[in-house]
Every structure is written in structure tokens, then in C-alpha cells.
Length: 165
Image 1 (cartoon, rainbow, N blue to C red):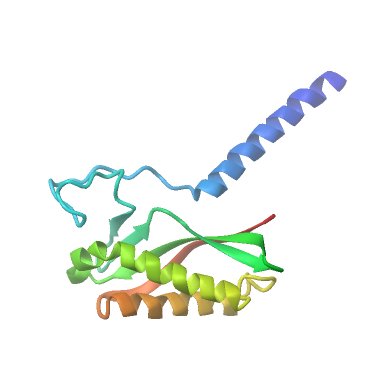
Image 2 (cartoon, rainbow, N blue to C red):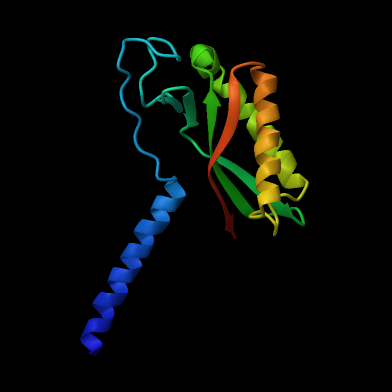
């Protein structure tokens, strides 16, 4: 019986490590190479350099930010936790190229708003409430529309988690 305990503990630890690594990585897949010679970032940009890639459906295009947004939660002038968000945009097909070229401006605008929400206490104990989720989503949608007035239909929060220290 004692001989089985060590292999079982090692197996459980390995599975937990794989799960934790997958959660921290956001389950992101490597970006695929562009189908044509050019893309929204210019002809010289490669798939590994692009931090957002389009995901297309019949009626809309989707821009998914490949890098997650990391927002510190402060308490007593120290980082208490980190909030991790994977965000996508539901965009109009006709504005696709225009929006993809502004991806750095979207990231800048979003992180600014997320830091303000963190300072306002939205990422504290009530982070998982539906009201907090809606405040974050609506704030980011307003922010997106300041960067691109027309063409952004919605902000999609794909992952929303908090890691305490």
C-alpha cells in the first residue's frame, strides 16, 4: 500500500501542474501563418509577431487579443492579487483592417480603464458578480468606441480570473 502512495501523489501533482500551466497560459494556441502575403499589420509582419488574429463567422469578424490583460489589485500600497483577462472584440467585417491596425491603441485604452476599475475596487471580493462583469464589459466597450467610433459591436470577455498572492 505504501508503495502506491508515492506514484499516486506524483501523478496528481503532475496533473495539477499541467492544469495550472494551462490556466496561466490562457489556453492560447500558437497563431497560424497568414493565408495571403499581407495582413492587417503589413506585409512584413509574421504570425508570431501579431498579438491579435481574426476569427471569422458568417456575420461578424472577431479580433482576439492573443496576450491577456494583467491588472494588479493593490491594497496598502502593495500588490494583493493579479486579475487576468482574455478579451475579444466583435467587429464589423467592413472595418476589419482599420480595427486591426489600431490594436495597440485598443490595448492601451483597455489597460487604462482596467487599472481605473481596479483602483475603484471592482476586482476585490465581488469580482465574480454579474454586475461587476457587466461594468467591466460596458466600460471596455465605451473605451473601444473612443478608439474606433464605428465598427466595434461588442467586447467579449473570454476569460476572467484572479490570482491572489
